Image (cartoon, rainbow over all chains, first blue to last red; front, side, top):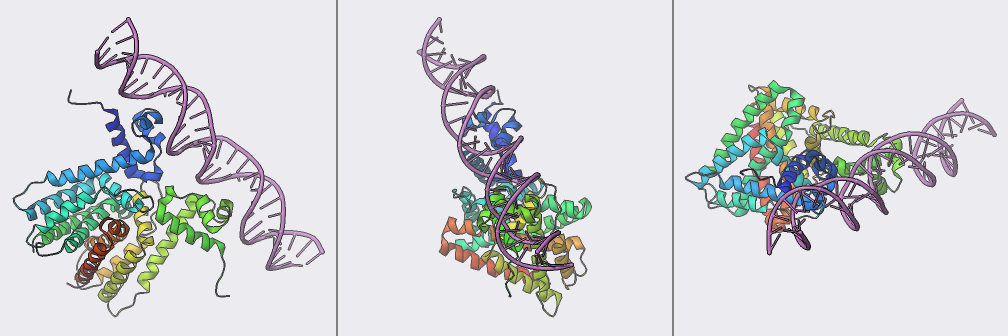
Length: 194
Length: 194
DNA sequence: TAAGTTACTTACCGATTGGTAAGTGATCCG
DNA sequence: CGGATCACTTACCAATCGGTAAGTAACTTA
């Protein structure tokens, strides 16, 4: 009874993985359907077009990212930011599905006129930053700029990890990753605390 | 006489723009051909398949990026790095075509088994970093990790610029950009000089 | 001037694309 | 028991995909 079947959710999960791997244009409805073991009309039954399916995938992503911020609890805003980013950096590199999805959405955002669902996520992080001693007297734009450096470095490394690992070998890549993880920890702390 | 027509180069230029905008799967041979005002068979005449066309686009990108490093002259390796990254940060945000191409290539690199042509570029930058006072006693992996933070932040902002501008409005975006440009300058200097 | 070569075009091809229309069998509800 | 809804399927469709084959007009070279 705990496990609802809910086919729509299952199709969304499979579509999320595929869109993350192959991008909007690289995924066909037939592929998602094949993953689910149904015909593509089963998928089309819930999401009336590929565009809508993709939009729903991005909406769920936005909800998930926001929820991860909210799930992070700590006494002060600065500590919350530190805890959140440390957790995100770890999961983004280990499981880059969401990071890839965000980056693909960024790349495709002006090519296709679609609304940008991740604004609330960025806004929440900015709000949190502005509550820290380091940023409390800064403008929103300055705080966002600071955040973007951090997010950019993490996301870029996350999407590069497979390529880097293949390019330099696993042992060498592991050293780069551990060096970067240390760097991230310092930069994250430096971001939240003056 | 200074302007060679060389159709292959022209098709490559057009294909570069399109692959940067839409990604490998988003571009059809017919689209590139339409841009050039020819039939798709004219494009296939030079590049025997879409895969080869895309590979050639990435090869030219790799050559171009390497040439930009080599074109940067300064008395010391540290100053060369600073000059190069400052120049790259400016052009990447103003003209994100190459940045988008690199990021798309990263995202697609494991989905399709293709060789990674940008290794020489990363290696050249790492070599340069290892010649600076800051990194001369560090390992290659530590230097690469440091580089990657910098490159990641710049590239991620470059590909986000249109989305951010649309999301927050032009004036607010300009403030973010100027704050980030200042940050980049400091981080770049901090990277090259201890 | 004849033979290539270059830079294409027209004419196809089978496969796949996103999407519509019309069912079908199972389950729920009154 | 009967109608409605759900979760699909089969059957199609026009358009587009990457790619092959064969030709053609213009230019270059021996």
